Amino acid sequence: MTIELTKQFRFESAHTLKRQIEAESSRRLHGHSYRAEVTLRGEPDPATGMLLDFGFFSASLEEVRAALDHHLLDEVADLGPATLENLALWIWRRLEPSLPGLFRVTVLRDSLGDAAAYFGP
Image 1 (cartoon, rainbow, N blue to C red):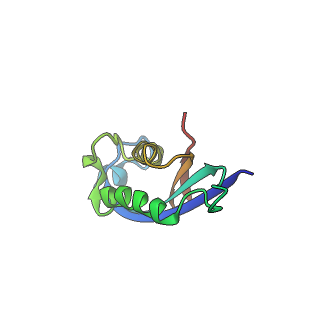
Image 2: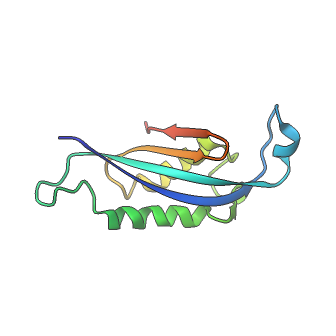
């Protein structure tokens, strides 16, 4: 039996971005409200029925959330340009060592209807 377990967290951050369209407003410092969804996939433990205790899941996500929330994304080490794609990859790289069965990381800007997902290598 394969189970998927998903948990979300939200963060508020500012950034600048060089773009070819809608370029002027993107170059100026501006912020967004983001939502990240992290999904694990695997076989549940036969003794507990859990894929992963939500307490461990929450603790791992909190470390990542704290590194992004109310930060200037332009200054986050190893992020690169603060695109949704780069945010999904950056979150994946931070979580992969502590979350076995990491399957997908999705970063959303709900107010704009935008999302990007990273599924790993």
